[in-house]
Image (cartoon, one colour):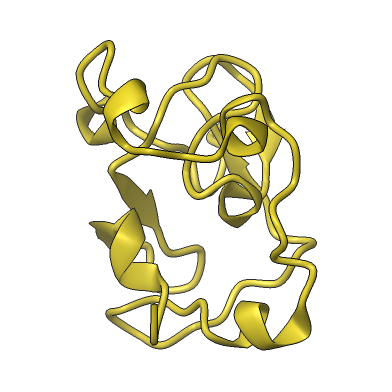
Length: 104
């Protein structure tokens, strides 16, 4: 069975890169960020088709963990891998994870 939204290994950053991305410690350990704020969620959108994910949407890491990639800015809470690219669940196109955050 193919999982929709599976993060492919081609999108992974080289081992050890996570420490250089300056994520908050809560993001590296899988704790939720302050994306609970509705205004911040409204600014997250696919750069190719403008689809806006919701908290209920899930992506799958190559380690098998399922989570909302925007809760941790692309860092898997299970294995701490930072994903450079994220696939849109609507248009199925890959974009840099940072490009999903409109307006900084």
